[in-house]
Image (cartoon, rainbow, N blue to C red; front, top):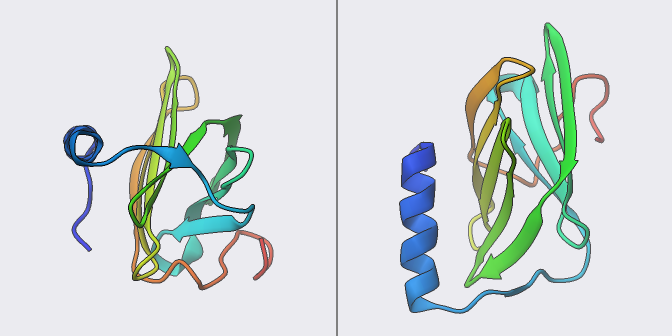
Length: 128
């Protein structure tokens, strides 16, 4: 799956919104987008919008609550504030995902791509 930039994600979301309607996310479950080797990841609860971004070394953890929507087979988490921009798009039809996490206070600006969101990842255990 091609890496998304913030601009690409915005264009994607606008295009999808024009052709489909948003709905509430399905029953709760955690979705994970892992970086290479699981050294950084974003996981979120599709029912509550609670998310965690972790970078394993040096350790960084960001948490928050975003809005979650289903757009066709795309599960989208979005959280934006004055200092933070988090967008996660998971394609539930092929279990792939893309994420952009930016936090100016924490000094984080990363794009994460995952070719198999069904595989566990995490800094300290295999089951985050």
